[in-house]
Length: 132
Image (tube, rainbow, N blue to C red; front, top):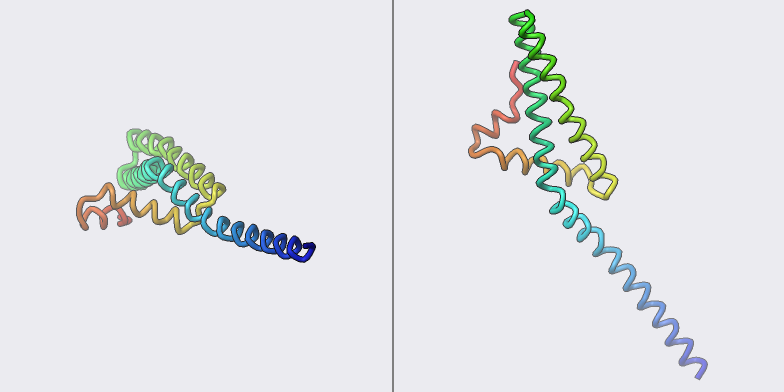
């Protein structure tokens, strides 16, 4: 009787261990999928807003170099204030990393954001292109 109890106890411990391992392996992908689906639209908006702010800032800087003046300086200052969108994007990115997403997950979400805004290949090229 004691041997049966001992073997049953070992079997239960093995089953609990295997069940815990299986749960541990399944929880991470499910968690990531849930987190991605919950944050995807907000992350895409933040990505697009930061990208647009950086592009506008670069254009304003180039405009100031080409045509110096009070109006150009005001445009550059406005573009610098708009760069706060990039701070929001960066904070969201860091929070998502803390919650368990990695750089590949975030890069995929950013690419999907760019593609969601582009209708054809030429627009995708224009979005990625850096103009001098």
